[in-house]
Amino acid sequence: MAANNTGVYETSLKDGTKSFRASITYKGKHIALGSFSNARSAHRAYNQAQTILENPSWTLKKYRSNQTLPFEKCVVLVNYRDKGLYIPNPIYLEKKFFLYYLSPTQNLIFDIDDLFYYSSHKIMQRGSHLFVADYGSQISILSRYGIRSYAVEGRDYRFVNGNSGDLRYENIEVLNRYHGVRQYNHRGYLKYKAIIHVRGDFVVGKYSTENEAAIAYNKAVDILRKNGIDKNYMQNYIEDLSASQYADLYTSIKISPKLSAIRAASN
Image 1 (cartoon, one colour):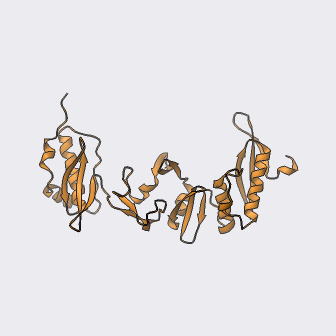
Image 2 (tube, one colour):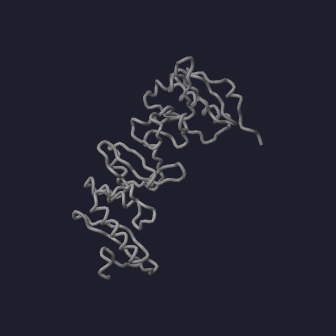
Image 3 (cartoon, one colour):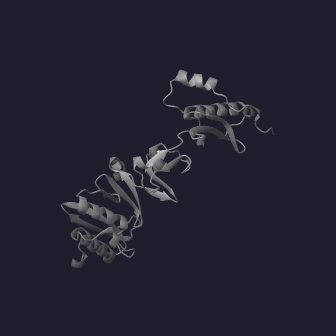
């Protein structure tokens, strides 16, 4: 490799195509910078990395889209330079939280307690859906807060400060934990509705507690299945009730008598 290509070495892809990898060593840490189609680009990436690591005044605000070095790698380098901790994902540490950069203009805020998880799990985005790959499955970021995949912001959960990118635990309020349960305000008091989708939304009943509404929904599912309607309804599991307490509530809870009249359409 020519002298002006410091930090670059040539390799080959599986199909035999030449590729050029760039890397840099900083504070005894060997850091891979990526693979490039030619030696010039790889060396340019090396020079940009060197500038970032040796110049404390270089911040992420100075990143430009025409840079050869990917933005994610810039975040990694700036964090390592400033905080002394190498993290392979685009994370920048603060004292009590950290920023996870999805792009130069979009970042997420997490509690420092989540650092270990997101240091080893890369966040991906499809539309507004944020997820990680875990054990071969796509796991929604919101599921870590007990928020179901079909939950609706504003109805089932909300961000206390209005910032949907602030994923610190104190900023997320789960309004509805259970399938088919909706909160509503009745004369200044918080009440709960059980709603099930049959041929449109059907109100099963209105209840004083979230547990009662969740059990009423389960009871509605049982009746519909008995009547030949099974739409893969998922039932609620109420953790804070014993089996006998659940059974007592299930027996006593009243639901709309109209539900029993709903039957599967005959062929």
